Length: 117
Length: 141
Image (cartoon, one colour):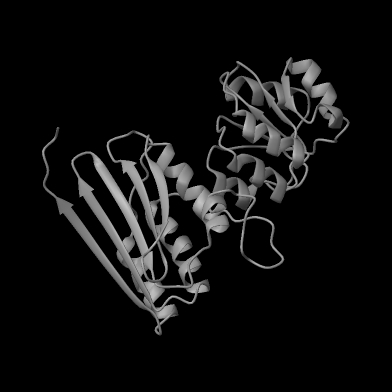
């Protein structure tokens, strides 16, 4: 599924990389511990977190994640979003909780066919 | 990273890459503060490197784009309402001070620092690692 479809169906606000929403999402990962995301997320995953530190942009870049959804109405600062634009990382946000967002993504079929869980 | 001892292991690697012969690690507890100090006598950093040291998109490693060690430590300190300071030592090397509010609910556990020290000493016998844990008495004001 393309990110654009997810943004529309989940009513997400796009904070960076709005010209890159044709990117394909392959599964997802939820964690607020960055070293865990480095170890266990997979290329193409969409990442759900409440972290807003600029370090999330580098983690998403290293792991080639398809995008980051920041929950609970939190937003990174402008410097972090500038880094995200530079690194072509799509950052989205929502007022909803991680639990709701992950549930909705799963209902859309994201991660349903993950074999290595 | 799950605890402070993993951060120590990670940051000590920087000192080793900077060819330090002495690495002094201190944990200083004073009232509600916990300060992790790592001092080395390696080749140090220039002004530009010092400014960018906790930027995850900056590294001195050749052929690498990212440097996460200090960035992750800085974030861990900030999550408790603390901060990270990096300064040049007079003479040689650098001093890193991560200040944590140890009663903050997001404070990470210290972890097994003795084991971390054993690992560092065993894997780099040519380097002098010193660890000190200091509890300073102070006015709570």
